[in-house]
Length: 123
Image 1 (tube, rainbow, N blue to C red):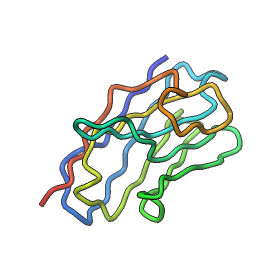
Image 2 (cartoon, rainbow, N blue to C red; image 1 turned 60 degrees about the horizontal axis):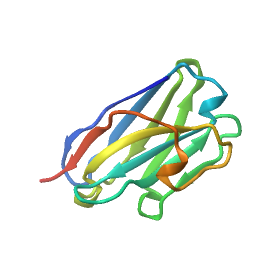
Image 3 (cartoon, helix red, strand yellow; image 1 turned 180 degrees about the vertical axis):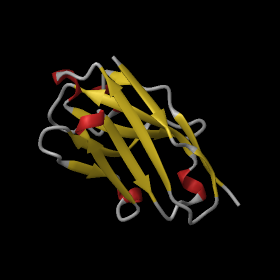
Image 4 (cartoon, one colour; image 1 turned 45 degrees about the vertical axis):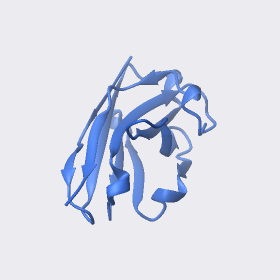
C-alpha cells in the first residue's frame, strides 16, 4: 500500500496549485481519502476529505470556497485543487487513507500516509 503525493511547490499569494495523490494497492481499506497539512511546530490538520464510493466531501472552514477535492477512479488518484492561496496555507501536505466510510477529521483515523509534499506561499 502506497500513497505518493506530488504537485507541491513555491507559489505567490493568490496563485493556484493542484496536488495529486496516487493510491496503489487500492482495496476496501481505502474507503476514505484525505488531505492533511502540517505547518512547522503544529499538528496535522484536515484540509479536505472524500469517500471513494459515495463521493461525500469535507472541507475545513479555512479552505471552503478555495479548494476542490476529486478522485479519478481509473487512475486511483485523488486531487486537491487549491486557489487564492495565502501565506498561512504554507505547510507540508499529506495524503492519507482510511478503511472507514465515515470521514474522520482526526489524523489518528487514517491508517496509511504518504510522504508529504511541501507547499510554500510567499511573495
